[in-house]
Length: 389
Image (cartoon, rainbow, N blue to C red):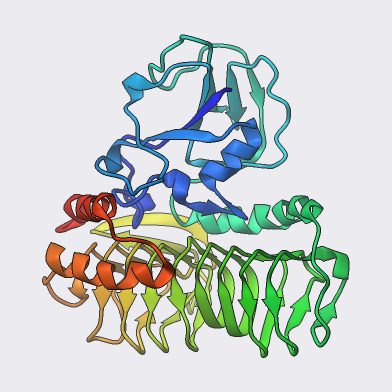
């Protein structure tokens, strides 16, 4: 079987905050699926590993490994993790490269051929998709790809829609797959499909507008959800629009969130609110560690790294970026840029390794994830890569 390796930039720039040095980009969610899942579907083979030097160190048990480039050989495809292919992708045939807007986004290695880096040699075919210039373009991928992704995924069939659930639009555009939906829920499929996977619970008083998808074990606890892609084991409430949740995150209380990307193991305190539109309606720029990053977007909320915590009443400005492991409290209005593992957000204090591990040991088992020796080592590596940066 052909192997698939996702290739991250060797030195991701500021535009990839808050996920640079935190997670392989293949773990980020573009449209309905993580990037490694998109590429696996596109190529027709499972992901074998990540070439991602910015996240060197131990990986949790069962995680896709980070591999050295020198160890990669064919038969394989090496694919660019900063490109989200449109699905279904055209047949690749005997192509050596896949091209998008004049640049190569994937390279085929013949049996025994070693990976020697990006190149422009060999026959190529053009493929469609979204070029990701930074973490903010995960919202662009959501806008451009989720609708079609869910139409493709409807082919998996559906359980019957329970009595007492109000459906607007075509019931055939709704797929419940082991999900529990209480009476009084509104499922509005007039603008796109709605897919709720096994173990999803939707409480009465919830309105979901498509295109939207919630992965296994997520609870939607009331409020309005529009155009969302939610990973496994999340707890969500309030008003959430055009946003991506990687998984294992909590936004269990009131408060608006729009055009945002939320990392894994995030907990947003009650009343945490994002702004996703400037008062001038102008284009949004990110301010990251003194560097200004243009997004060319009018709507953009917050980019929130893994393991971030916010206190009640936290206000996140337009285009806020919060580094991995930060714990925000004190000043209600957060800064445009919060460094990784910041403690409080308005000073120079940081979350120590011991404090980070102690909190993780309390949080992860709540979602049935063991904090075993490999997980502790992975969390330690995450802290070492990011603390102070």
